[in-house]
Image (cartoon, one colour):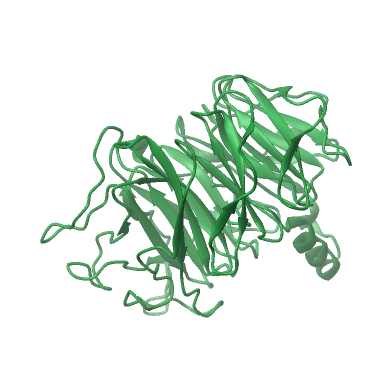
Length: 421
């Protein structure tokens, strides 16, 4: 999951500050418990865990159903709503399941905007083919989805007369601030129209999008061109619109949520960039490449242009997820091929330096990493051992596995995590 506020697959930042303010306002009531969410394509639901002060996980009874093959989860920065990506197991059009977030961390299906004075539960919002990453923008107004496309299927380059291209695309949705339901922002010119019910994403051909990150009005998209065997990161600018207002269908290319196309800039990024994370101030972008077994750092210019910070540094084997510590001082990667987690310090220039003792063993095929809001714990989803490892994080960024770790994941083959508080 990536925005500074989501998982995304994958990046969440400033949670500690947000929750400090909320705690001050609410008197540290029932919403003070740390909560962890896990999703997996092998279980069509979202598991919810309470996190103890020592980092131990206890599954709650608040599990909710999701769509087919859930593979990513994102939470809006105001802690109102949660969105789960339903991949359809990578073989067709996917969707986004929509939930409201209670103070206890429990989820409930979001409601559609009132019609004739009544509301009804939302159904998954349709996306393109094989959605793989989801993020929420900084204002909590927009949701972005990367539709990678079916494996082995070429990226669509044009629309047909009646059907929009859905393979290798970007979907955008506006968030209804009342009930949390999504309305798609139609990204293309005819045959797509604002009132059309079918998905209308933006093609990224000839490259397929793998990962997302967003800050301000910039959306970063990590992509792979299968024909050339090369990776890249494109920066798309967008109009965030007015936060807190009920969405209406946008008329692209200039309405709220419309992605400016072509992208503002594109930079080469290894062979197959698959996960991204931003630092807490939005100054640096970090990208993993499971083909070259590296993580690269980029500085972010005022117009979204990226500049490489030195050369990519070695991680473990097949790094597939990356997380920046809320302090912005440390970075962690889940290395699926070597069954471990790499830890790095982040210098003032964005340069990465491996921490002493890194990498540290996790479970089998670790597929996702995330931290709690205060940066006290690192959570790791171990896909093939069906467990979640929990590590405490000390002031130097070093990891120590907590007592009782790894914990049963409940969902089968966990691949994505999100945490609040």
